[in-house]
Length: 138
Image (cartoon, rainbow, N blue to C red; front, side):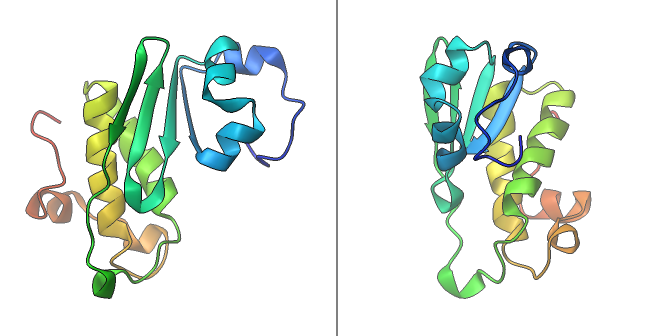
């Protein structure tokens, strides 16, 4: 949801949301993770930049650490969150569970920060496989 600062989202939006992917400040501006789950969101993915992400459901939460990219290899972080979200959706569509899809999405996002640009930085399937970022079974 954009902008994150908007506070008047219709309640049914949350009730119809299977997966909500936001950063920490966006989650807070929408009532926090517990508030989002109480409103009916099924899964909250909280992106943490280089620190990975959290997968949060009514049954608990799991922190998935980020992939370490040496400082000298970080070129451009623009678009990493979008790459994460797209990769998560792709891997969920291929049958991976929430945590496995999020872990793979962290790896894809880590690849994107090593190139300039947004969409132009997204790895191809071959690049993701070669880098070990493509999960088996996907």
